[in-house]
Figure 1 (cartoon, rainbow, N blue to C red):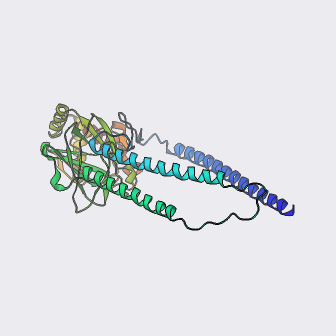
Figure 2: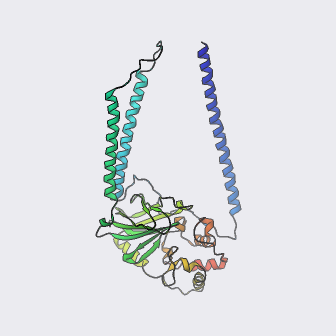
Length: 377
């Protein structure tokens, strides 16, 4: 009787301890949310300065939806990945179900019955059981290894496996933006690129600084872009549309803001886009535009950014057809006049750590440069 009472007291103590722990955790979390909310409001109030430009709609994709699920497949390569993923999931579910059924059966069938005393008879060693739990896992692992190797071989090409009718796209990773080049059409663009539907796309991946990883989950798996080493990747889009991705290898403070946008077009629409991208921008004779171009050439802009017929910078994104792009700042901001002004005023405020400095331009200089940039379409 004494032992029963002691056990009951111990159970109550454990229950009270867990209850207090859960209660304290809830209180601390609640206070933390309140504090973060108050801090956020104070930051917002302090940031509202009418004399500076403010970026708007950060991370907004106006015409596309983020989808990083490997279960949504829009190319033969991602369908192979999806098949392998389902196989692994089904095997894992099967193992879980078998283990749980055996566990529940043992708990019910061999539970201690009322009136029984002492430990049950201990059984040691069973050759059939030990053989089963050794051989079956080995067979499962071998099957998974073989299917994984087959999938890798089917989606990961070597340099000699370039399709004859493929479109070459050179992809260069920078901190923290992507450069795309299509030599066939003399196209140079940044962060977003258009490709034709139904045609194999042959990606030639390099890096200008550190290791990056190219990943558009609806079109293909991940492939690293490594300094001084060229990797090759391939995909064939089944449907037209806009597909989003991002760098999948940690590459610094703004790794999460190194986004990718692939627009898959019909063949004729793609050719029209590519031909347009290969042309120099129109030369508009407007007083403000001319002043903006002169400011662009006066400061360090010309040394980093290339504009066909104006500057030859290659360190930063090419701006020849800037306004044909949907996003700026590595995919962080919708490409519009207000966001261009906010970016020129202080890039570090929007994307801390990026290589573009704040040039301390006056308000009128910023407006002139943006007026010039708005003509680059």
